[in-house]
Image 1 (tube, rainbow, N blue to C red):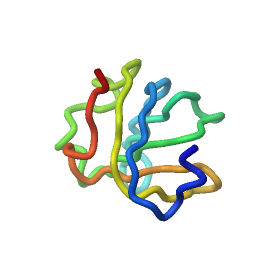
Image 2 (tube, rainbow, N blue to C red):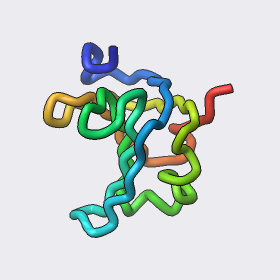
Image 3 (cartoon, rainbow, N blue to C red):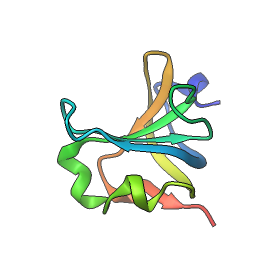
Image 4 (cartoon, rainbow, N blue to C red):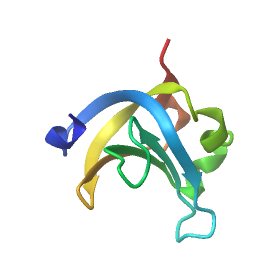
Length: 94
């Protein structure tokens, strides 16, 4: 479970069951929630607005697909997350 690896660099895979582009929110984040939908999510990949152009509508492109994301695991309000700065950090799982 990713929450047990906060502070470590890791790859986390799962199905994007909910995705949301919060364009009106501070920083215009896109949230890709894996395996459980918000508000019961257990892991989130976050793409900030300043990096979004590298991802080509990720909330549409990845919803319903299984992905793997790589980066440093952080905890936000008790939920594990990885911030994606580059499209090289995300891939579709075969």
